[in-house]
Length: 121
Image (tube, helix red, strand yellow):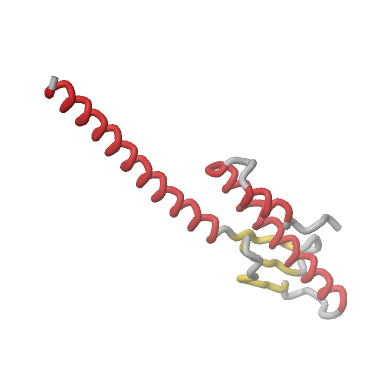
């Protein structure tokens, strides 16, 4: 009878060890996935190729390039503004698509990223 109890305790301990190992692996994967989301960036060009903007899902603009032939003025200002908005929106969408893979489409994070997309102009 004691051998039977010892065997059950040992089996329970083995199951618990397996669950802890699985939880640690899931945590490590989630950390990597979240880091990947933090690093998502997208580059968008303006329709007339006047400028190019790179932005992150958090909304940071990391690079702006104005084409050498672009005419300075209100037209370029408007193109830059629209391109920044488009790059930020595209980066959030890319992050939402990636997050949906490991968190599921119903995740609040995915919903928040999708809700913060810029409306089409």
